[in-house]
Length: 215
Image (cartoon, rainbow, N blue to C red; front, top):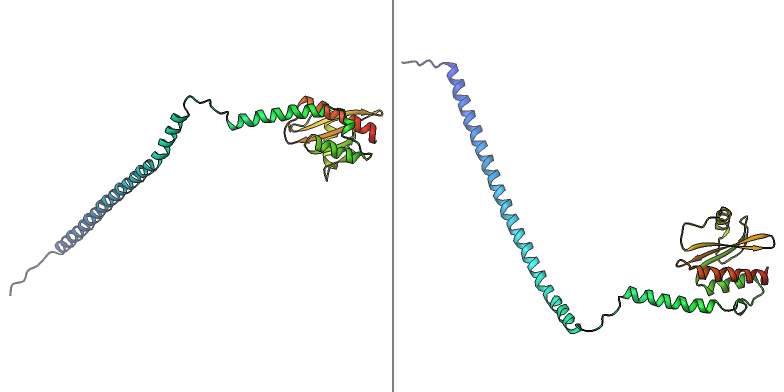
């Protein structure tokens, strides 16, 4: 019987070669999978792009009648006098109302402040000038009367501000100091919009009248 001696190193080389072949096959499989996934993503992206493009085209088509209608309206209204913008019309209307109110407020205060109680006359002033609130306090912050349900804190803060000769930073809040019997009565006026100098003059005049009549 013939015996063949095989060197153990040969076994190791064969085993290593088999392992390398298996690893190469696995690597080739992974690369092919990556290529397949990449192509799949490219196809999906292309399909999505086509879908978005088709949607935009559909939106453009749906907007065309509105654009055509707008153009036809422009053609119809060509040569007509353009109407004023809504904001401009509102501004003009407010100015007209304000001029009318100033004319009314320029009348004798005795026509408006007929009550004996100071609070009733303050409510009349509140209504006459369309105020948010009106508080009358002493120069050291004591509340004389107010349309505000909780005026003490603001009276103290604003009276101190008035003593420093300052006005609040908020434009729709004004302080009016009226000399009275050796002291100063402070009117804290809150309005929806910033008051004009003319309106502030009328309010000061009315405060003087109310003080003479009621205090």
